[in-house]
Image (tube, rainbow, N blue to C red; front, side, top):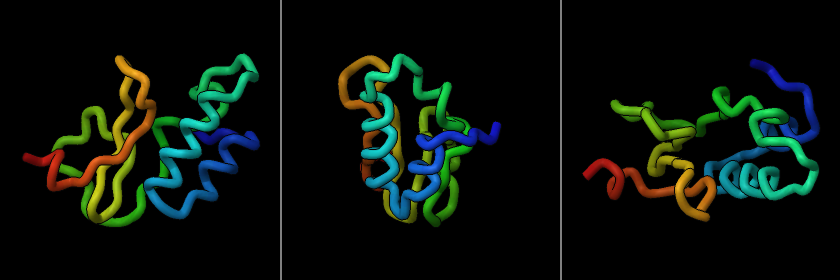
Length: 88
């Protein structure tokens, strides 16, 4: 789903994976009363190069050396982990 919101524009402007994670976490922390999925196309997040991982469950985006996850049970929010660590 294509969202036309200021928050979606901020996501679309991200140029790297770490910036995407920071932006998503900042949007999620905004006190506007809306959920992230209300203002961002969470299933259509940009990727930043590299092959998609073979198994993408729980992976929201990637680049050539890293994968981005969401910590639903803790307080990390979106975070980036090196592919080498994640693919062990």
